[in-house]
Image 1 (cartoon, one colour):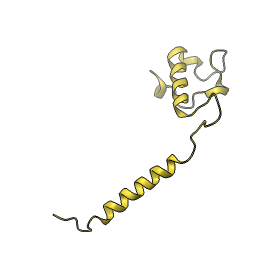
Image 2: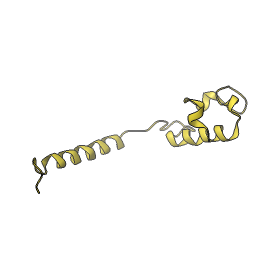
Image 3: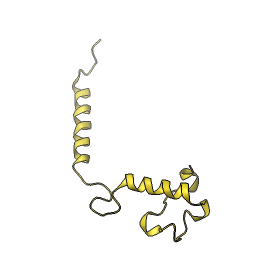
Image 4: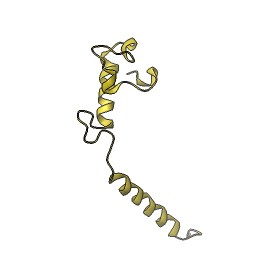
Length: 82
């Protein structure tokens, strides 16, 4: 069976999806050109280090081992628990 509207709507959606992907890919990312914060991957890596190596009561507190100015946790504790 043929689609009622033909292939035009499907083609339009595919073209829009590719255009969106290309448009997003042309722009920078969070942390671009600001070492040592190189973006979301680095943020996730740091948050995993915090949640795995510090007790829960230190996750949201400025300590010598947890510099909140670098990349403090910004989500609820149970969503970060490993």
